[in-house]
Image 1 (cartoon, one colour):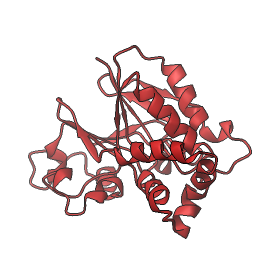
Image 2 (cartoon, one colour):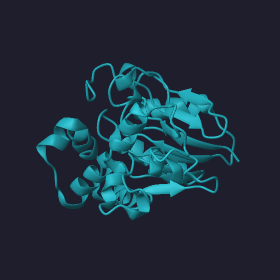
Image 3 (tube, one colour):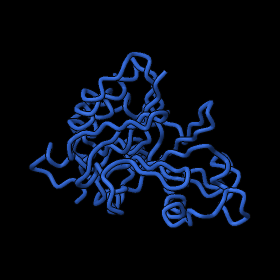
Length: 241
């Protein structure tokens, strides 16, 4: 069975559909979405509707991103803050203003049922952002760190590739899993436009919220599929630029 991981989407419904059509993967494929489905481009509600429908016919794992929690809080209680609105939340507020109360309730349940991390039978772990605990994400004192943390990615970007895993200086949290898959921090910030790995960490966020693409990768073969740059599909919008 093929397993693929999909990076941050940020309201780019047109790009998500384009990506799925280009990949055209066989029935039985397992899809692991790393989160941040919303906040950025104008079709956050459309993205969630698509994912709900998609999951009815496909094997899907939906991880929780920080933006997904922020939207959940807004839909649940009206909680919002100026920083969230500036970082893409305003586009989600506008998108959800078009939905009925019933539709919002369905989306709220989807967001409520997102999971913080997923570990597979090959000892690969998937989560939105990272983790700090040396015993793994399930031991985090603050569980929401797994969709906010950037230290894991910053660490592997700076790690000395000559240090052996047997060296006492090698980061203990990297030894816990064969591979770690994350999103959250666009690889475009360090000059890449496709998913990239350092040590055993793969980052599949290719900057869809800004001027990058949505990416999908086969976790076994490392084959990659991508949408167009999302901003080209929304020429009259600014996204999170």
